[in-house]
Image (cartoon, rainbow, N blue to C red):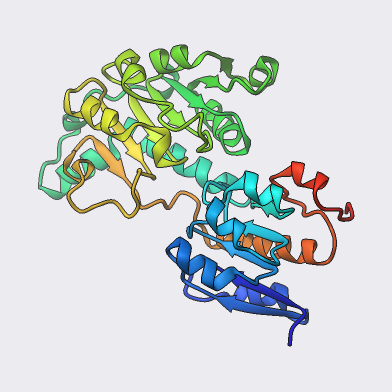
Length: 330
């Protein structure tokens, strides 16, 4: 019998070869699951020493039923699937992989901005219908004449800001938790949320999903935007009030949207976004590259090994857990 039991609650990769490589030679039993409900997670993970999680709910109810768990490692950046306070209370280290797709997501946000700015999708559709006419894309404005308002200034938006400035865009940044001088040093202008939405030709969302950011962009913010504005979201769907966005698009309050995420994923077949010509939508793909997927999965597994080896993990999320469990610093 193995010393440790590590459970993967759910995954969409087809196999777990990278995780198996990390655990190879260690006294770990790897259990592969595809749990969807709280009940399924509890049944699968009740006696797990470590848990790797993708989308399955690790709610307060689930956490309370975990008897042996020492660490929960989340694939990716967001930890909204995990109830952090109850995990901390039980002395469970919660980890993520915050740095695996910084270039991928910032590149994808930039790709959405530029494909819409340059009317790439629109002109492609006209040409395929037999219409060879650049005027079908008019108006198209040069980058230096436009403002991109970036919401958030963490790892990913910092990369995006540098890329936008290199191309020539004017950049505003809203992040109340970052010193204004840090924004200025990056070549951007620190602004309030109100100024960001009022001035942006593009508004690119990069804030994490938390209680205080759910619905951050809603009816009030859309009413302040330019009628030519386009909103970009490569963060989390619920950061934007989706019904307010639908209304703003249907009434031409704003010009368009570039979305990699929505409130409910996969998107329902009858969703209004799917019938809108002014919406470019992708299937939550911004994080992905071959290299990013390998890095994310490898680091998620290494988080588990670090804690089971008696160390605080490199990517610890709930630092308050240090008052509940004594491990070694690396």
